[in-house]
Amino acid sequence: MKRLILSIFFLISLCWLILYTQPKKPDLSGTWLLNKTESQLSGMMIPDNIEMVISHQEPKINIQKIIYVMGQERTQNLSYITDGSETKSEGPRGGTRISKSHWEGEKLIVESTMTVSTPRGEFTSESKETWALSSDGKTLTIDIITKNPRGESTQKQIFNKK
Image (cartoon, rainbow, N blue to C red; front, side, top):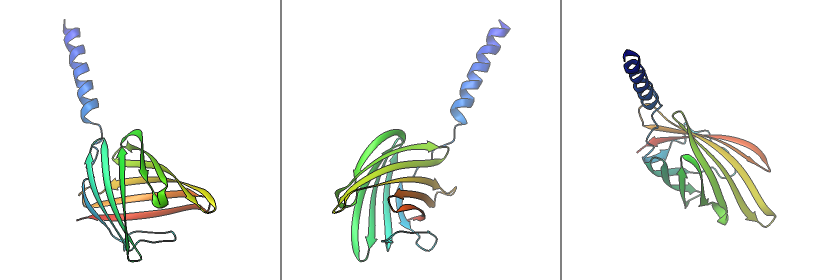
């Protein structure tokens, strides 16, 4: 009888340990403004500013991204599902962005492929984004690696919570 009680206690303890020691997924919700001074931006069209409004209810993340470039404003609506499911969104110039996202500990990984039609034919790029929220919840860092026919580039976008 003691063995049975000890076995049950051990199983309950093990279940509790598994459930409550998993890393907590951060809540990315809020309005985020690009900190251009601290960011490391690259590319042909570096934005004047970026504002993101994120609604995060695990496993769904919806983002309205407003990008300001050369006096013009462009809005992107992105949706991710953090269980690895595929999502589609409209990219620039009518292209389609296909993304999959998942958590690695407290970091969100977003892997995307985007295809755009140009006068020279179809153009495909791949990106991997690693999203990390600071411990105080006030800074969001997105490290981006992009691969396309022109080569590979990296960026670090730093956002401050509004």
